[in-house]
Length: 433
Image: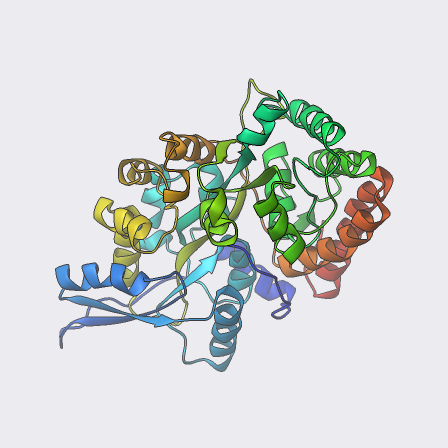
C-alpha cells in the first residue's frame, strides 16, 4: 500500500550513473540439483502463491522470507549489498524505491534476461516506473494502485447531489454538500500522505524527477503539481473540504458517522473501508477519479510494488523466469488477487482474474471494470533517488499549509519541496541539471 519513507543512504555521482547503465546479470541453473532462490517479500500469503510455482517447477524452488513492510526490507537489503553478502535473489520493492536501490547498485538490469519483452503486459505508466526513463529494466511490476474515488451516494442522494466526473464538479459538489450540512465533507486534504499527493500530481501530468544523460532534474514546482496544490488549497481555504489527515481516529470516526462523505483513494480502498467502517458496507460507490480534462482521461498511482532481482544473485535467469511467472501468468495473477489480496499490475491477466467485486462493494458489479480503466490510463511518472527526502518535505511543508488554510500556503509548499529536494541531490553528490 503506502508507507512513511525514511532516508536510507546517499550515493555518489559515479554510483548514480548506474541508474543509466545498469548492471549485467549472470548465473543460472545448477547441475547438482534444483536451483534455490530466496525471495524477500511482505505481501500477505505470498508464500502460498509461491507454493503453486514450487509444485509445478521442481527445478527452481523459491523460498519466501517474510519481511516487515517495505522500508525495513529495503534498509536490510542495502545493508547486505554494502556488506557484499546476505542479499536475497529477489525482493518485493515499491515503485518509488527503485531509483534509490539502483543508484546503490542493489538491483540488476534484467534486460539481458528478456524482461523488456514484458512491456506489453503492463500499462505505460506502470512500466515507466521500472525502466527509469527507458534506461534498463530493473524490476517486473507486481501490483499497482490506480487511484479511484469513493462516495457515500446515499448521503449525496439525500441532498440531491451527483457523483462528480471532473475536478470542477468535485469542487462544486464539495461546496454544496458542506453548505447544506456543515458537519459533512466530500473529502479531506491529507498532509501525511505524500504518495496520495504524488498520485494526484501524476494524474495532472507531473513527473517529479527527470533524467538527462547522467544528470537528474527536479520538476516538482512545475505546472501540474502547482495546479493540484492550488486546487486543494482553494478548497481548504473556502472550508469546502476538511484539512485533517487520513488514518486518524477522527477520520475513521468520520467514515462511520457519515461526516466523511467521500474519499479520493486507490483500488485497495475496500480493504481499508471494510476494516475501519464495516457497518457502512453497501453504502459506498466506487467511481473513476475526477478528471482535469474529461476528453483525455488520466490517472495516477497510489501504492503498488514490483519483483526485482538483486545484483548479488548468481541465479538471475532463474529469478527472472520465476518473477515473470509470478506477475504475468494467468494462474499466478489470479492467485495474487485471490490469495495475496493485491491488485495485479498485468492489465489483461488482471481483467481475466478479477470478475467478482470486493465483498464490501458486492452491490457494485462494475468495480473492477472501473479499476481496469483507471489502471490503463495511469500516466508516466519518474521517481528519483531521494524520493524519501521529497516525501518528508511534503509531510513537513504541507502540514504547515494545511494548518494555515490558505491557497497561497499550499502554493508555497510546492516551492519548498522543490528547493529541499534539489538541495539534497546536490549535497548527496548527484549531478543535477
